[in-house]
Amino acid sequence: MSINRRFISKFADNLLGSTIAISMMVISVLPSVANAEKQISIYTDKQLVLDQSVNLRQQAIRVSLSAVLIRVTGNTQVVSQSAIQQALSSPSAYLRQYRYAKTDEVITIAGASRPAQQLWLEFSPSAIEQLLKNAQLPIWSDIRPEILLWVATDDQGRRIVGAGSSPVQKIKRLAQARGVPLALPSLDLIDRRALTPARLWARDEVSIENASARYGADGVLAGRIEVVSASTWRASFILQYNQRSHYFVAESENTTSLLQNIVNQMTQVLAQANAVVIDDNLALPSMLIAVDNVTRFATYAHIIDRFSELSAVSYVMLQEVNRSYLLVSVRYQGKQDRLLSQLEGLENFEAISVSEFVTAHSQRKPPTVNAANHIVIDDNDESASNEDVDSALETELKSTFPIINTAFMWLEFP
Image 1 (tube, rainbow, N blue to C red):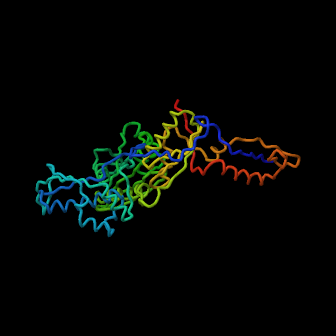
Image 2 (cartoon, one colour):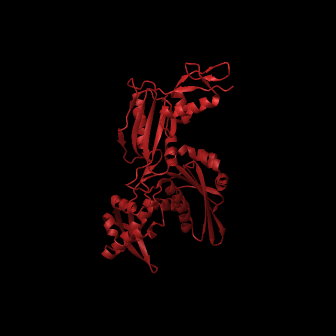
Image 3 (cartoon, rainbow, N blue to C red):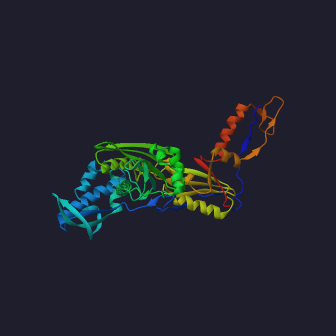
């Protein structure tokens, strides 16, 4: 016979001696970096121009505004939207400031090289975000996931190439234009033992993941570049991000367009996971998080700070403080999977099941079994079948706690 337990809806004393329910304590969150994510500049751009004429400057502003809009949305097709086309007809309306600088670079026209000047432009974040909000287009914040890059080539036999190689430099430059920060492995003895050229060439997921773990990046882009014919290059890459693997393949007659294709595919995946359409008339989604084993005020403050620093979180609302746990509601931007991934990456947090948390914090009354093998559920010796008790248990659990979306165990510092 299975034994059921009846849970009584009663909380233990909280940190101050009685349960405190706080519904109006809101902690505002400013953008900050969590885990390996980087805060980058997404509203600035540079263009080479021949001189400081108004016509050339206006052309450069339009080109740069297009680049910034693609970077902020993560979508190369955004410039085809009618609202964006209208904005591009008056690009100076979104410009905050600009300046010229000397450069050693040249502009080649009809085979002739002419000295260039560098035009640096900064656009207004608020104006651009309002444009995208009005057009109901996604906005990807300036907190971006850092991606670790592994590249193998076969130009001198199959080998893993580093920062000084042309392919790696091109990928970094193209990713920077899209607003994706890349990190590079050291390629030291530890790396070479963990990931051989053959394993990288095969895009061996386990080997790539194990070799990358020491760097703590948010994701990994790894793959190979090869010559498949006299005029064709092929790139085959894997992106490991948010506990999923995405495969990219591209072919081209030149390496720049080849690698641009790979970077575009990578950026599309990242933007879909992180960019969000913001509607000022709609509330951001929320999640109720339970954190067990919170026995000290210092721990409580530390946990609230860690939640507040997550880039997916807009603000934190403390729901309940108890002697041994917290209930915290967070409002977040983007997809729930992104928030869960960031929560699971926090140090000293161990995911537990919600039912495990509820069981631990509901007071138990040991069941009594009568002669008919029924469980006694009240002091008058009335009894019910296991099925009846299961139904009553489910109802009582719902009344004991609000709907908790996810739960964690706080692991005390050693």
